[in-house]
Structures are given as C-alpha cells and as structure tokens.
Length: 254
Image (cartoon, rainbow, N blue to C red; front, side):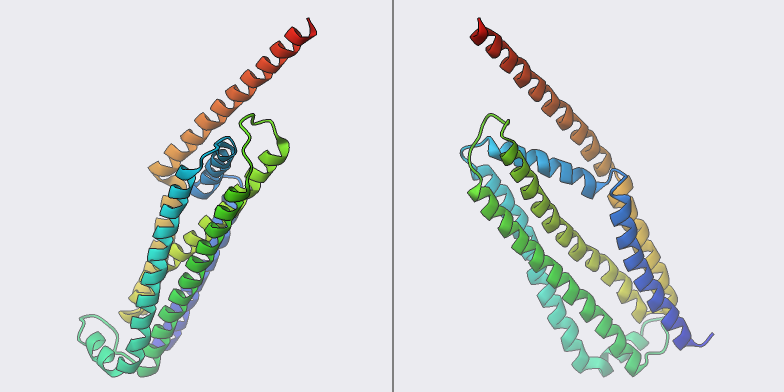
C-alpha cells in the first residue's frame, strides 16, 4: 500500500472518529445516563434554587470559577496556536527532528505542512468553542441578575424561567466540552507525525477514552445517584408544600 494512500485512510479515520463519536454521544445522551445528561438535571435543580435565594453571591462565585477555567483554556489555546503557526517557518528543522526519531516514516515537506495545518485547524476550533462557552456563561449571569426572588417555589413562570437558564448554561457546558474534545483529538493528530498507523490507533484510543469517561466512569455513576436523590428531595418538598396548602385551606374554611 502506498504511504500516501495510508495517510488518506488515516486522515479519513480521524475525521470519522471525531464526527462519528460526536453524533453518537449526542444521540445516546438522550436515552442513557451520562455526564451531559445528568449534569443538565443538576443545573435545572440549581436554577430552581437560585429563584428562592434573595442573595446570590454563591452563584456568582460558582459561575466565576467556571468562567475562569474556560478562560485559562482559551488563552492556552491561543499560545498553542501561535506555536503551531510558528512551526510553519521552521518546517525544515521540524523535518530533521522527525527524521531523527526511530521508527518514524521519512518526512515529506508537503505532508508536514498538511499535518501542521490540521493541528492549526483543531486549535482554531477549540478557541471558537471556548470563547462561545464564555459568552454563554455571561448570558447566564445576566439571566440570574434579572431573575426575581420567589421563595414559594410555586410560580410556574419563574420555574420555566429557571429551566431556560439551565438550558443556556447547558449549552455553555457543551461548548466547553467540544473545546476539550478538540484537545483530546489534537493528541491523536500529533501521532500522525510519527506514522499513519499510530494516527489511526490514537484516534480509536481517544474515542475509547472519551466513551469510558462520559458514559461508564465512576463519576457518571455518582452524578446519576446524586440526581436521583435530588429528584426524591424535590418531590418530598413539593408534597409537603401541597399538604401545607391543604391544611391552611381547611383552617381558613373553618
């Protein structure tokens, strides 16, 4: 098999793994407990609690912590992207470094540029996802600031508003997750500099790692159990408030 055909196969496998896993995870999350699905339920509970808090300093601190983590990755992505672009001016030196590594294929000038272009594209996508995530967390801050206080928990309009806040926060988390996923696949892309076969194996390994962490990890099990406990607690609260309303109504009727 010609080496260039193997490169095409490896690159195709890479994109199929990335796009295929993204579609698979999005579809499976609708019917299976995973990090994204369970955390969305936690966000809904969180936003319900926000409505009943007159002072929301804690929420501001939590959101600021999330934004700080994303800002770190966004700034780091720019530095990495600058480094990758700098390598375009040092292709000859990069070829000599690659050629000195044992068991690597002989570097080709055009192929090295193509591999650097792939890395640059990945980190551009990561930066766009991180910045969009930051903007959406800013939207959540505005929505929390605009949310009125209601400690009864019976206002349907505010409950629907809380769900919309959770949706915006969920979209921000998805954008952050896509940015992190770009980092995972960039590691696979680095393996292309060594050999197309390692590129294929690394792409498959990244998919395996992502699936285990998002669907089968201990963290997923703990978050799922936590969601069940929260659902049970909110059901108890609702039943208690309903009973209290009936008692008050009976007292007023007498």
